[in-house]
Length: 295
Length: 337
Image (cartoon, rainbow over all chains, first blue to last red; front, side):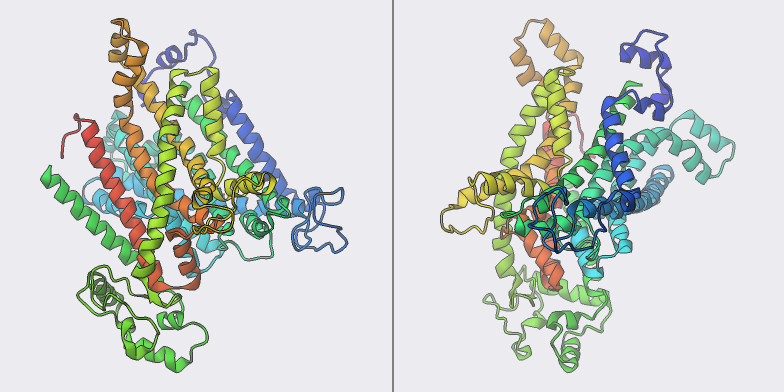
């Protein structure tokens, strides 16, 4: 683990001369990676779009513009209008809201469950570990889409149900990763020291082990953000997303797909929106991974 | 080895039982009684009550799951196939046979009649995709690794990250816009019967491409990492220093050792591939098991949901087992536990 290595080792690996300034703080390290910066820029643009949608969107997302001549992009409707003559640009900007609230919320819940289970399994070992690991194995044996489709189709599409589905899909993988990292870290002396001091196991797990495994978990979280955004898009595309008429990127692609031959822009623009947001998180993950390996 | 295999096969069966039980609980204990779902919204309350009694739906879930299992392995009659129910479905194979998944209430046909044909179609799609993904990912990963840090590596890595950010439905829409709408080179739907001007092989091009695009980038990344790791090992340096041609070092020494990690990754991709298959089949109206699952889930066709999920979990679990076995064969250092 990186704790065991000295700063000099890190510098030698990096090919940097001793004395070169390497920012220690992970947040500051991001600014050394151009890829991560591009990723952050994409993410923050969409967050800004979501927050300021009422101010910057030219129209309200559900208003129909009967006067719009044709539906292709024009001066009045920069990205055109959809089959119901609603402004696509406004719908995309407003559509950033459900994705950017639902995905982080669901993923945070999944991490809460997954990290807790992984720490317990890794630290406790024995039958507790067996019970958790076998459950995780069963859940991981499901193709992810099966969980999403069967669960949402059965219990109905709502924000709460999507959060539950994301927990079921993501938490097992997070638990397995955390368990592996915990097994690696728990042999360290500082863990033994804490146990000798008589610290509570919960304290050891969350205050001693967790901070030392956070690096890989943060990179994993960025990648999972991408998957989760894709999954929410897929649900919308399959007709299992949040109910209409409020804009939802996946749902917009679904509505636009049958019109593809005549009006490709209806489905294409929401596709680009999803791609750019997912790309933002994947670039951030790449950049973090790179700088974590470097420093 | 034999003990290990028996142990792992036992684990596989347990996983399948657990997974099918979870799905059973989810679809059969969900809001809205099972009988109502089977008969649809236009059935009278009397009919619903009759079916409810006939199928003993009031029994506890574990008991009903046991009965479902009995029908599946062929030791019990499928209660739905009872001609007195007049559901209009006859199973040509009789009422008791191994692999009896019951009767689809949506299609009024035995599930097993539909399931295997659809599964076959999906396997063709997935198989072709794997045939594209593996050589492409190996080549991309190797070229990137051998040029680590140089322009070729940067280009491949960047393209990989971009491709891994494009969900299948989006790449489907984009490829259709380019190759179908603008260029008119390929068909936009793949019903798998020769319709008009498009032969079947032309219908397969876009779905296979969509599936391959997303997964290739992902696998290539693993190949690259594994190759970089192996190329830094002392025995590679020795091989180069003793004057072996670079090509021999790469293909004879590095390749086999570098393949171990990506091999499991590729087999684990089958799980991903299945997810991609659902979306791709919907985009291209491809008659596979993914669309079967989606339609069944949307309609509430319980027997089909249970059958398709069990089959897909079975596929995923067996490829994982195959991955573990292959991993051991490739790497003799791993001893059987």
